[in-house]
Image 1: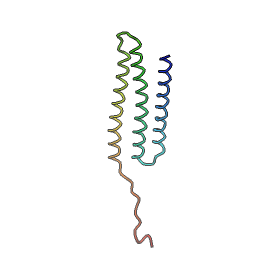
Image 2: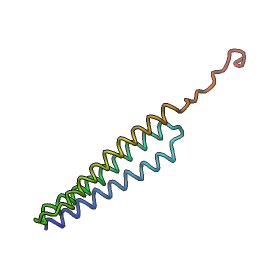
Image 3: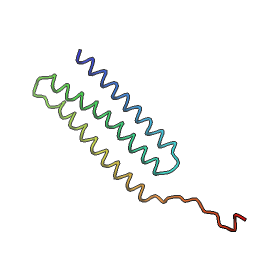
Image 4: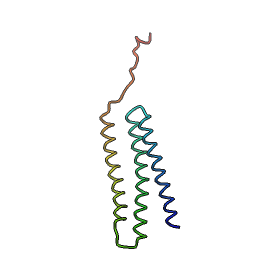
Length: 117
């Protein structure tokens, strides 16, 4: 019964991760400027990766506990997925900072007094 509950939780986590990943892609395609695109891509993308990482780490830890042997492959799977999450978050944040700082803001021209008359 424990395996069934774990499977349901893992499927829900992966489905939620897929949903937030889709929101991230849709936000990247819909928003007009680079700052709102990077904000959506960073927040929803990191949330999607976090949910998938939690699912992977939960599976690795569960299998490591249930195997009862001195097989560390499942523990290494869990640790590797957590380290992957940290690496992706840090690199994504650095890339967003570089892109947002190098982008030129677009200002609408202010009409002169002569153009109003």
